[in-house]
Image (cartoon, rainbow, N blue to C red; front, side, top):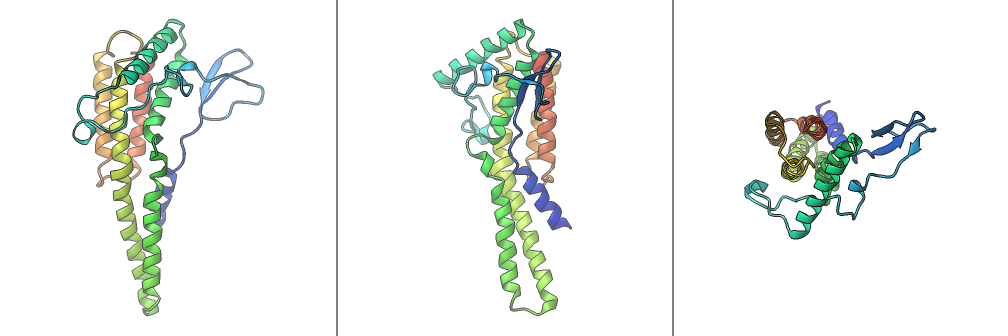
Length: 243
């Protein structure tokens, strides 16, 4: 049962992030959801801040500065321009009372940090590790007595789960945690308000960043990190709407 639960957890981690739908209902109210809208809804275009290739959407800063990705982020001139344009776009959305765009911008940036630049393929590594070690254990067990085959295969599967969990943390969770912290700290500086978030919101986000980094430790269960990501996502949306 432990092996099956571990495989299911790893498989769920490999699922692609849900699509975001931007639509208006029959009463004229705008909605932003991760589930398809009703059949009578009017689908709206993605807000300009989210369109690929537009300056309103900054390129995600990758883990490339400081020890373990920590330390000040050095932006290129193009990145500075993109973040400045996002700041202006968010300021316009705030002036128009468009909270939907504020939420979508935060959600889109978090999704890019989690799965952009090839990270979407990394959950396959632990699954392949479990499968390969399971096959190796099965092959070695062919020459043994029947009473020894099951323990040997189970041992190799458990070894595969351990190695897979290590790969998951080192090559997926840790880069995701670094990218999230670096980019969301940049977003805190470009909220379209001309000032930093309130002190209590800054403390809340710093707590969430630290919890996320702790959840990326190999000694933590694999489902802890996605839970912390969900908590951070909710906190960031709260800061976006009420900075």
